[in-house]
Image (cartoon, rainbow, N blue to C red):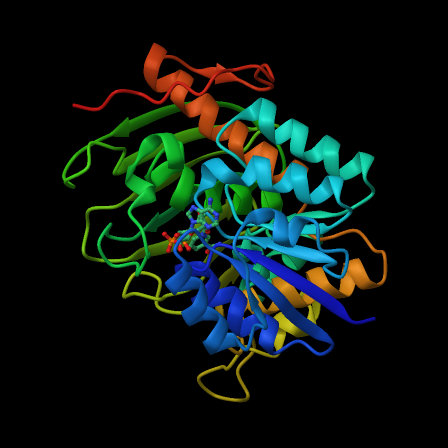
Length: 370
Ligand SMILES: NC(=O)c1ccc[n+]([C@@H]2O[C@H](COP(=O)([O-])OP(=O)(O)OC[C@H]3O[C@@H](n4cnc5c(N)ncnc54)[C@H](O)[C@@H]3O)[C@@H](O)[C@H]2O)c1
């Protein structure tokens, strides 16, 4: 089936991720693009061979030839564009965070369900090959019961080539580091380890010009009994990327985009199982220091081919909406991640642990940073 797309927002994520990915997918065409900055939309249209630079949202929303939309605008617009597009029966690929308001996120999910269209959220990190391998290992209980985890995801505020400063304008973004960067790991940990039970968070402004959260630490209890931390910052020049899982029978260390001296390979698995109990997709990565030696336990490192997670997420989106299958990362996943952001704000504001679930009508109460 041919799919026609409409795009809202022609900034960094569209040009770096969605534009290239969609242009590699067969039978897909971007029919129209809208951006409040028309020259930016025009530039993107030239680059990605898009026929129409339209003058308002409704030119996309009311176009019956458009099957699906990409929402790549500042966060505060995700809700309105999703509701309007869903009501016109368009499938929706909405960038993260789903919204900056819990009630609105629920409305987005309901509107998509009522209109029988699909909503996928742009949590691309699930699509890295190493993350998929970790998921397979966890599903087979390979490292036993997971008792703890830690993950870090940091990127200096000035390095990402955003077209606008909306991330640091809190009524457009809903927060800086936690809702933009940490949220990827909030989703990834939930994908791998299950639902969150409670948390306590410290969010600080430490360094950057905008008075926003640039230093985030969340300590989380999982329903499974595991406990761990998510850390994220926007001030350090060193990009931080690494996740460690510790289980009763092994450990897993992995990264997504980048490696560094402390996480020097995309994936490493520690096990004391004999080779006969190690699945081929892991065992085949093991190189002994002499071929006749037997595996006596230790680290097995894996370097999967570096594939593009944005390509995979959008290929999956197109395949699933074309064949009427459920998308892989849906609105509920977006909502659950947003709940962690809101719970962290409550924790920071009230200096306490917060239990899930939190009420749907919890207001956005961004902490004040000095
Ligand atoms: N999944 C990821 O890895 C990832 C990476 C970056 C950004 N994002 C998400 O993508 C979204 C956009 O981020 P970005 O980095 O591209 O920002 P950006 O500032 O580079 O681009 C945003 C674009 O939206 C346009 N815009 C503003 N108001 C608009 C409106 N009313 N209608 C249409 N367009 C409008 C701006 O003019 C700009 O071109 C955010 O929600 C962000 O969280 C996701």
